[in-house]
Image (cartoon, rainbow, N blue to C red; front, side):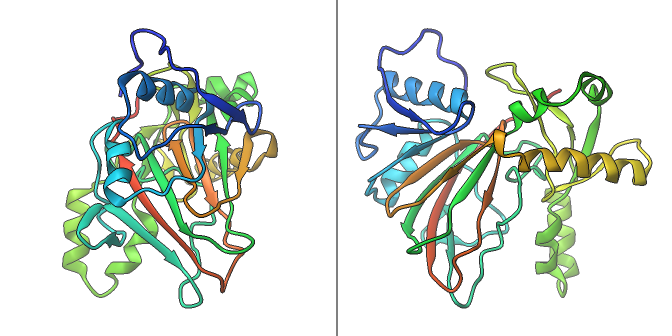
Length: 282
């Protein structure tokens, strides 16, 4: 996805949720095909706010897919459960038998050589209370570092791995070996440059980053713990309360997210469609 060559003429009705991250886009019906101008306006809002939200979007699966495809080719998650008949749609359901496990700060699929551009997540059924998703602005997190640390991080890379998905292969070494061939550990810059805006962001996360290349393990662990903690600073965050048919569209290149698992044993049922990205550069 590239920046539009000219500013779109469509003016969106936007409510900002924080100074740097998060905005609710109103008066847009995502059931309708996007015009080129509206698509460009939505993408610019995404770049500016890192995550944008839409309310009252009673979409079919086909409409959900069509909206996401307007921003790029879709990817299939090799480890997550998909909706029957729709391999690009992740079916994410938590209830009494399945507690939520997405309650850590992370950027999606950084174990891919080309991690995702972003995701479009739709709420089908939500708890009466709880189950919010928090988003953290990793561009602001980078800007908040002192200059000496910014200088130290220049040129650093780190290894990423599909870490917690490995438990699925405890009794399947051949299956694990196949996945390791398909998804060999990539080494991404610790500070990523956004391909469309040129802005810098922290690009390490507790879910998938393993260690900083060429650094003593103790020093690497200490530095990564410090960098991970930046996502937890409230000044860099927004929080979204879900309602049925709400949608979040986030830029996976510039923010991290955390799904609060505070609603058990209530039901939280979501569907996610993910857009392919590019190889991160520093």
